[in-house]
Length: 83
Image 1: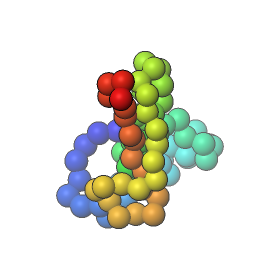
Image 2 (image 1 turned 90 degrees about the vertical axis):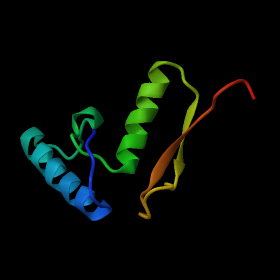
Image 3 (image 1 turned 180 degrees about the vertical axis):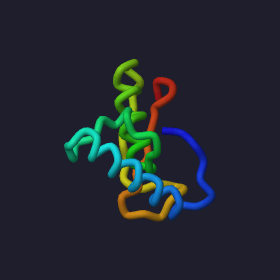
């Protein structure tokens, strides 16, 4: 789920195209998060949360994103140290 993008709209368009292709191939609207080649901040946050849970890294998903202005924005908050 990597790759850069020149702007947010371009990333959204690429995500829509990739998710439609994946939906068509799988013939399902539920997509495996690890199969998305492109993702918005909410998808990246979900994937990070799954990986953090696998290694017992304290992590929470929070609504909102520092970098995008979309309503569906999400971020992961990770606790470092014992404080």
